[in-house]
Amino acid sequence: MSHSPSHSHSFTTTTPSYPKPYPQFLLFGDSITQGCSSHLSGPLSEWYIRRIDVLNRGFSGYTSQMGLDVLPHFFPAAPSTATTGTTSTSTSLGYAQGQGQCQQAQVSLMTVFFGANDAVLPGHPQHVPLHDYTRALRSIISYPPLALHGTKVILITPPPVDEWQLGNDERTATNTQTYAVACRQLGADLNLPTLDLWTIFMTKAGWREGDGSDDGSTPLIGSKAAPRSDVLDELLSDGLHFTPKAYQIVFEELVKLIQGKLPDHVPENLPFIFPDWKDKLGIEAQ
View 1 (cartoon, helix red, strand yellow):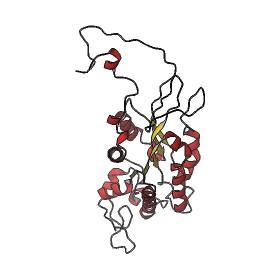
View 2 (cartoon, rainbow, N blue to C red):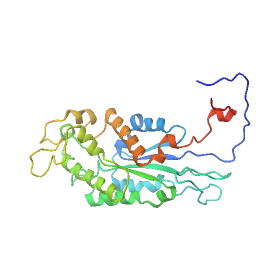
View 3 (cartoon, one colour):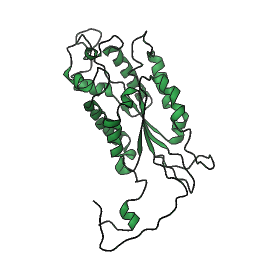
View 4 (cartoon, helix red, strand yellow):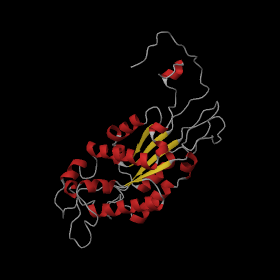
């Protein structure tokens, strides 16, 4: 509700000499990212309102290698001025600080969420061998313009699959686990904030470290060798893609990760891009 002071206030309008862009938070991944607009990118946009624009760059069916191929086609080459083409001065958070010139929005945060398609079994068109998967992830993370933008990358492991729902032989719970472990290890090797979604979902389903080991004593949840999981039924709509409940978990866990690992990027620690209405009217805070 707006405040109506007893006396009128006025403010001086100015004609901007350049647009003032918002920093960006890119959600980069496959169909799980593409389908997150209502239940993940929407809540993130609300969380970052007036501070960062959250953009969905999800590509259904894509593998890590396809993501690497398309990245240069949408990721800004450098935060630069339109008039001179020179690199702009910026803070560590990636906010454009140009003086009277049009600035390229800087990418402050980016999730990298691939692996669900890479992990299809050999013989299927989308299959990417494990070493090629981690190599493609490394190449995405080390893409030079990310450093120019000061982009903070958040790696997300592929989630579990549920063979009971899938109804085909393209994916197995065990093979997907292998890709999730490799992704998690890459995050540790590179000291990146990593959302271990596989472990988060599987722990909720009752999984414990050692389950699904080669001795076969405890079959892996999600496999046909284990009883059907009610939890995976609630989280996966078809054995692979997410239900609204799953996206809610991703949002909550992503917020916790940012608060813990990237506190400078928590909304309360970021400025509004444009002033509060009281500042525009010169009204002092009560």
